[in-house]
Structure formats: structure tokens, C-alpha cells
Amino acid sequence: MTLGFEIFARDGLARTGRLHTAHGTIETPAFMPVGTAATVKAMTPEMVAETGARIVLGNTYHLMLRPTAERVAELGGLHRFMNWPHAILTDSGGFQVMSLAKLRSIGEEGVTFRSHLDGSRHLLSPERSIEIQHLLGADITMAFDECAPFPAERDAVEASTELTLRWAERSRRTFADRPGHGIFGIVQGGVHPDLRERSAAGTTAIGFDGYAVGGLAIGEGRETTFAVLDATVSCLPEDRPHYLMGVGKPADLVGAVKRGIDLFDCVLPTRSGRTGQAFTREGALNLRNARHAADPAPLDPECRCPACTGFSRAYLHHLTKSGEILASMLLTQHNLTYYADLMAEMRAAIERGGLADFAVAFAAAEAGGAPEPPS
Ligand SMILES: [Zn+2]
Image (cartoon, rainbow, N blue to C red; front, side):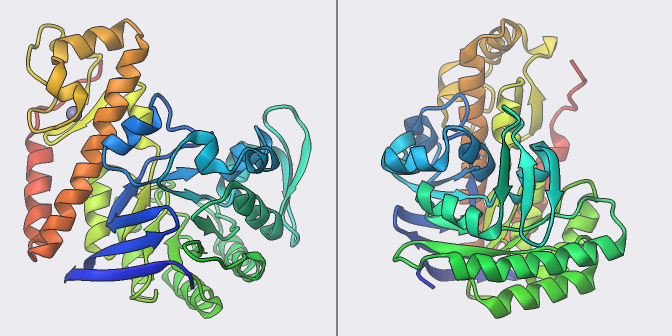
């Protein structure tokens, strides 16, 4: 246990905290922008830091194939390679190998697969995943897991949950403890509360620096996501960070923070930024829509980002319609600023004991925004 985590304020199950890593301190609850291939797409590292982010996520599956973890290590590690001085969490590759690789097969040892880039053959095992994340120099390493698809037969989910526990044990054993670096275990179990309980108990018994909830927001619906979260978070060590993987929409973040989640990642704000979608305090907007063509107003008058302080909706509409690179840059920076500020507002609300009121006001503002017809 070499990652320091302090909890400062509590409001119901929600809490604010500080996570201390070798590359700085992260105020939680926090959102982690996704930097798949050693870059947060369309952003320089300075722009990412300007949004308020102090931790980004890197993808083991992508980096092991190109440029390879060994190459990144030779060049001084992932922080140096991508010129990001703050913290990095790397995923284990388990989720992406199942969604992206060709001809994959799962066994006790790990997953053998062919690269989606050049068809080359690889084995990703718990030992290899942890070694890759070590070579990259991740501040937070994720245990190698298997995420059962949704929907799936209960027997299949149970077998996958047990395999993930055996892989968690091997991951923990392989991880080299050093100050400021930690490893998180991943709770699986699909939508079955008893399997989630079993997974949480087994993962906790192995002992990790933090605990992630995986395998959610893959099609089960928000109500089920929250029900599973309620059943899972209550089984996790209270004094360690809780990370909800791959989630999500702004309203998902508010609901999950209320349920005791401290860390999030999702491609939504970055991917949406590259397709003309902006998140605002009045809900999501599609900048491609013709109704923005002559609008001199800023995207979000309360936002501090360069897209909102320097430009009109009309200009952002023009850039988006013209396919200009600047559209992706400005809208990604806006969306990440919006997510960072939402997390900061929730931290402030927790500190004053007002998260429930904040959540009500947030839902009302989102619902009150003008409905956006499809472009
Ligand atoms: Zn903005």
C-alpha cells in the first residue's frame, strides 16, 4: 500500500479526498481524460492541464502494440514520452483486447490475440499486463481482468468473475511496490448483486491500493448501473479510493459520486468534442445544428474555457461544419473543462454538505435546456 489517500469531507456516501501519487496530488472526486495512444486527442498536454485535470488514463492494449512498452521505457517512460508531468493511470488491456483484437482466445494463462494493426500474435496475461504498465511508468496500475459482456448467461458471468479473481491475485503478486505507485483491483460480477459481493470480498481479501468497479455502462441501463453500484460500493473498503470505469455522462457522474465513487474515466467528452457535441450547464448541444449558425452568444456563458471566453456559437458552428481541426481542439477543451468544473462543483457541494441539493439543481438545469433536435 504505497498510494496515500486521505478523506476530508463526507456527505452521505459521497466524500472528498486527496490521492497522493509520485506525480502529484489529485483532488477527488476526479474525472480522468482518456489519453489512449499517449495523447488526449486534439489537445496538447498544456491544454489538458489548463482544464484542471491532474491525471489522465493511458491504454495498455494500444501502447503495447504501438509504439510498444519497451520503446516507451527506453525513451524515459510514458510521462516523459508524452510530456505529461502529472499522474497517469493505465488500464490493464483486458477490456480493449476483447473489444478490439482479432482472433482472441481466453484461457487460464491469459488472452492470446492478433493485433488489429498488423495481425501479429500476442499473449496478454496478468504478469505481462503488469510488466507493461511498469515499463510505461504508470502511477496507478490496474489489475488484469475479464469483463463479461452484457447480456450474458449467469454461469458465464460467474466463471468470468472467478477468473478475474485468480488474475487479480497474479496481478497483485507481480506488481512491484514503490513509493507513490499503486495497483487497483477490479470488481466484476455483471448485474448480479451476489456475484458483485463475492467479487468485492475476494478482491478486498487480496488487498489493493484502490478498488475499481468494472463491467458497467455496457448496455444495462442507468437504473441497473446505479443498483449494481449500490450493492458493490457498500462491500468495498471505505478508506480506499473507488473508481467507476468507463462512465460516463454528466448525470452518471453526479449519481455515482452520491454513491461513493471517487474516480472516473470516459471517452465521452473527448470523442464528443471531435463530432461537434458540447456539454453545457443546460444539457448537451450539437454545434452542427443550423440554429447556431448566426448565434453571437458563447457556448456556455458560465464556462472559463477558451472556446467560451473567445468565440461565439456561430463561429464554433462554422468550424464544425467546415471540418476544421480547431473545432475538435476547442470543443474537446470545452468538454474537459466542463467535466473538471462539474467535479470541482461536486467537491465544493460535498464540503458544505449540499450534494443532494446540488444533484436536484443539476438535473433541473439539464432538463430545462432547450431540447436539441438532431442535425
Ligand atoms: Zn467552455
